[in-house]
Image 1 (cartoon, rainbow, N blue to C red):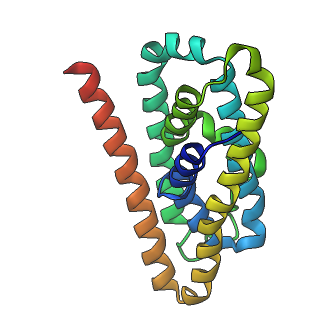
Image 2 (image 1 turned 90 degrees about the vertical axis):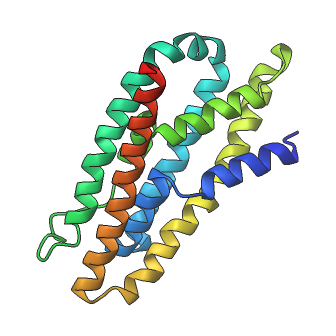
Image 3 (image 1 turned 180 degrees about the horizontal axis):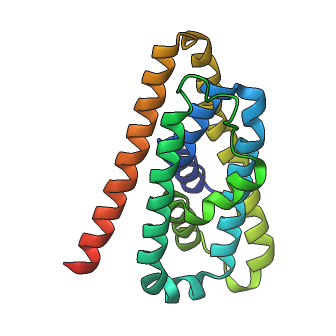
Length: 202
């Protein structure tokens, strides 16, 4: 069975601010909850798939960790900076018609370069690795529990964004909000990138 440590860890990691939740809040503000639901489901599906992958292939992932970590973080942070720009521009006058929230597939694939998602799934795999004889059944239970805990947590951010949408109908307020979300995302990306490069070249 999934214990309280697992429930606590996945819930805290899923609900705290990170790239997924900032994107979901911004999407809720700019497009509403209904249009954000596919993105929300994609985040959960992608994260759960990532959890299944890292749990099943733990030894392989750990053996590659030092080789793939820096390129993965660099690519992920570059993409986060690009997303920051897209969030900022989504509040520009006349730009709403061109912008769309991430689709289910896009949000699922985004997890492959999301540093926080990798941290969460690798930690789940390390901390809650099944015994050899229980690999398949335990992994299925782990991934199901992960998805059931993750979805409502990321949903909170999409709902908060949707509720804020009504308060941000004035253009300057929407631009300010998108600027704040973009700034937080860019700061996160730069902090992760600098931290990683310092760790490698220290």
